Image 1 (cartoon, rainbow, N blue to C red):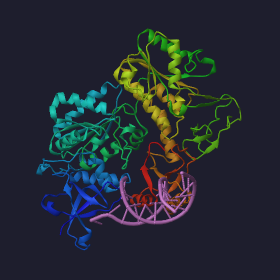
Image 2 (cartoon, rainbow, N blue to C red):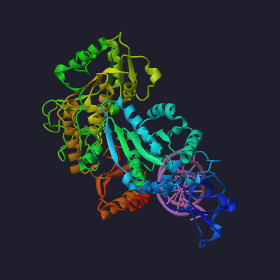
Image 3 (tube, chains in turn yellow, cyan, brown):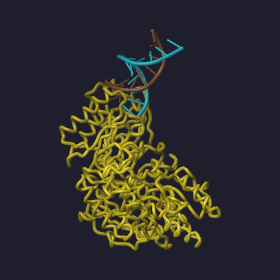
Image 4 (cartoon, rainbow, N blue to C red):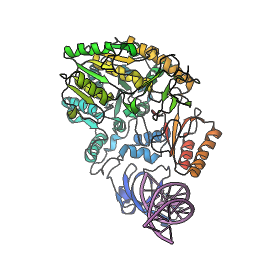
Length: 610
DNA sequence: AGCACGCCGACT
DNA sequence: GTCGGCGTGCTC
């Protein structure tokens, strides 16, 4: 009797065999089926048939029902799932379910027999990066790339749903229902109908978020990724894929081009450009006219009443308000944003091992290095010269908002944080908030954007904090450039390459330095790192699991960069252990995953946050 | 992953 | 004395 080999959304690579029962003639690989699984019922995905009769027939259960009347996955997506499971440490089942897990049962429409993948051959693959001078140019780039539609379907990825929706509306006006919107926030029914239209259709233009990288058309002719460095391209659940990377892999397998339309260079893009693995798109690495101005803040030049702004910032702000331009004040509120500065010496808060900046832990008790495992207790004095003249300032959005309202009673001031909705923000001419104000910069012209404390961004832990700030400022710079808006970066000590790059509009200073740092310290994009998270309550059991992992790391030459709950500080209880690993190139990914599974650890390749 | 079974610690 | 959290094992 024929067996149906099935995989599930569980971290096991094993396939489970079922008997077709009454559905014998109507099952094919790529369909989802409902089956008994232990004491529960589960949905699985059929991967193949086997004729094996060896195992006892009795232990093999029958399929309960078919979830789909036709396959929801193509052969190409199957092989993409193999890539996902290998690259991002998941089972094949988890990879397949990340593509079609959210779909309602798919009924009534059969895939046209001719729609099997036409493998175009690898020669059509190329990677191109477009760096926008102004955000307004994005539309025309995307529209021109939509011209590729003549040769087959095109997938457009956007970081946020609202951006995908707006491009989709625009495209619907041009090509009608050949424009399809696809993202994870669609209700199952709409998501399913979009999926089956993509399965059957030709010359489709898909606009979507990271999930749309799995759009199932058989005639894909190009991928377009907007702001390809954006952190929302990273899936937070297993498999923790990165959509730009998946798109690139898919493009290379299909032999089609991939375009990135970016408001900023990222370290990764720059690294690839430098390696020569990318054709430099125009002046990708070149300069743009800068609208960024650095303002050094210190005792002497802060405003009397608005103590979080320098006098220069205040006068520029008042000037803008008089001209009836909108002004935004941005502050990174995370963890209270402690700003450390020694009044006596310059080098006080640097790590002795790797010369990187030290930051204060959330509890304020420890100084932590953003790159290595250095952690020294903070005793309210400068670790360099011992001076007690160390300033720790703490500002919040709320406090700044109240002070501003008091000082400018006639100005319409609004607050923006991730928790405050647009309606609540209302009409305004002065906006105070976290990076959530970015959304407003898209929707209204602004004359001035002030970063209260660049340090509040740069001091957040993680090897990419400088890069994130660099990208954020470049994005805002692109948003403001057409309207002649300006950016002020307040900083207590603006001496890094980063500031020079931003103020001179030349990304090279920062990117060059950053690539060198990543290279010598062994961080992405130069070296792959893997984060392993281990949970456990009882010390004894936890230690035995830790031992499984640590023995394995030792045996395979996998370097552990740090471990234990002391670094970085773990917020959610004391029961999570994190390892940051630096495996040797070409390591056995499947084997590492197997060991991690044994120890109950979750792996993430090249994590953004460490 | 999710569920049941089974082991030790603190409670009426 | 049991209740329950957590660790372990199994799923065709």
